[in-house]
Length: 387
Image 1 (cartoon, helix red, strand yellow):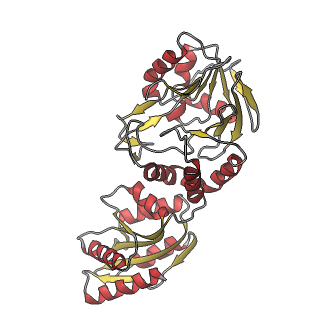
Image 2 (image 1 turned 60 degrees about the horizontal axis):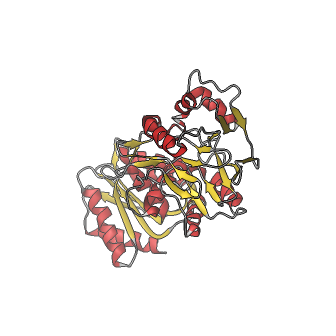
Image 3 (image 1 turned 90 degrees about the vertical axis):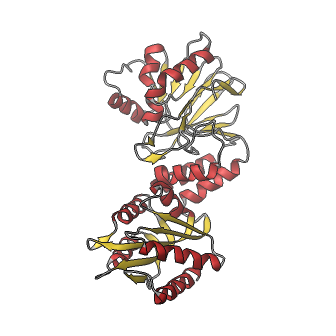
């Protein structure tokens, strides 16, 4: 999508990035990602955010095409993360008379990100509830701290009833890729914004007072219909409620014996009509495993004992759960050990520190390899999960 007119006088000038291997240095993005930017053409012209620096020249070309010789009056900076603010200096070199519209915290960050940036006389500072008139179009600014950086704002355009939502309602994936919104938006939200559920809830309450007809995020598609679906998903995710009634099984295995127990539990649960997802934490995408942990109402962790602890991939997974505020779930455990099984005790202790977690106390212990009595124990664990 290049230079597309989204509504009368509002244009898309963002870029797709399919060269990136890891978003934020850790999340696989097999279908790339979009860096969204917009232009509002009115009596005054406002550019809404920039893009990552390595796509800056392409973005600037898109901008020049839309402007068609006109010079922009404003650059509105809603979020200072480099994937959106990385081309601010490029913009200022091209359009030195433009005003930067943002807030004091963002201006501090600009000084930190761009050595020698000249902002004197160019800063148009706004705060909660303040407006910027462009002519027929007016932007109202809404503070959204910690969604998911402290300086974040969103902007509501009153004529077209558009919410420029910063990272809110974003998803992984380039815009020319057709794929399910829920899956990659969930993986994006849980792993990047997931820790900050309370600030997201606050923003949703503010947004509920606005007549929003369209949502234009900084990543992913522009949302122009069925907005209640997307808002409801964000309400579920940010309030840490299960989205799907079912069981997510996350396992690690050294020689395959713990894996066999995890797969057997999956088989038992599915025979009982339970929806089950499963992940090998050593081989599958860790971010997707974290996503599924938050998606499902129940979870089972299965790990061998390793160096008197859990297997390293399980330790990493539990660290992610804690850092993203995993809560309000029922969790069971499977441990394996050849001489002193300790994984079950350690997993219980770590998960037990999280908020509103119901722990199934009778965990399953496998001694080296799964045997007939272990299958019976797995049946018992399945029954307890169903309660």
